Image 1 (cartoon, one colour):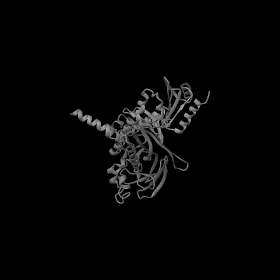
Image 2 (image 1 turned 60 degrees about the vertical axis):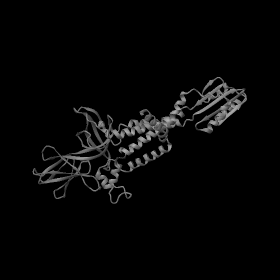
Image 3 (image 1 turned 90 degrees about the vertical axis):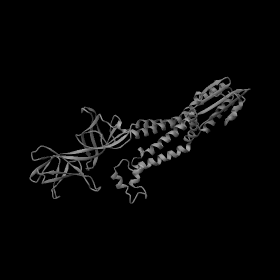
Image 4 (image 1 turned 90 degrees about the horizontal axis):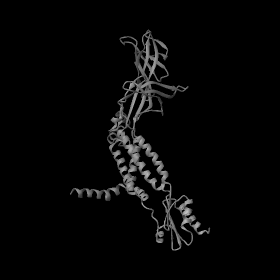
Length: 445
């Protein structure tokens, strides 16, 4: 009974399911779906906070009349590439490619393992679109002429088989295999990768904690036995005062603080370690180091102030009395070292630069330094090597597919020489070539 059940399953798979998966129309439909949802993942910001989506995709008025933040989050459009339905489409497309590969492309490999199909009867040449029967010429002449044109020739008795461009038969298989490799890499990366952001002041050491997008199997990729120390963060400015580039001097350290790797990163030059990539993405002002009269240097925090999109400003409160009944506010817009000092009444008292001092509330306030914080985007995607390898193979496979695979048969029988051939592309060029071979046979030597 169980044996009949499995036989029924096998018959269903071979007769119904496999032809359906290998159908070109299904593959095209799945490709269109992947393109549409990939576009939505590009247009809709991915991995942002709930407040971001509520602010940018309100319910009234909803975008296009229906796309509100609730619909967006329900459908998973905030993390398209990790949703179950997008991964299911990728898997289904991979199954379709696999079915097509085994039902149509692998047959080409079987063709290589079979004996050469020599034509032994003149009537066999009638099946070819291009063939000719000659009253002169010999098999040896055909073999020599085809060899000069790059064909590999094989003879048996009075028959000849020649071919060139075998690479063109393998090209489609390489293309299919590369696409499967790209899909596998994309799925593996979605399931095991993670994306994090950190804003760390210079001089501090941190472990990756602020993860806002991760696959269900990403826990193994999150580093637990090493951390990152921000040795220094600085910004280079243009003569006009605008930001030219910002840099972070980073060290990867183990649990004992031993340095494992060190590098200075900037935009488009990340730090990579054990499959994790740290990108320079943002910056901020973490604090200010000040001195009151001859006191020790004090580190005071600064926070970014709300400006309703009119620029970036950081501010901090500096008490000038031990009971904090009096103090001043320090405001900075960059790390060039210029600060504005405001009194408790909100009036501007003075402007002071790093390394200088000013008199406030009867004391000397010295600005020792501004402490910058580096904004890092941290990403791990174990599927990237597979994707890159797949794209490399895809380019090779496409180039291989453009090579024409040409076959020529010849037979000496009853005083006549029969020649015919076929090709899978570049039909006109092949016909010219074969006619030139025939003309060689007809031309007296």
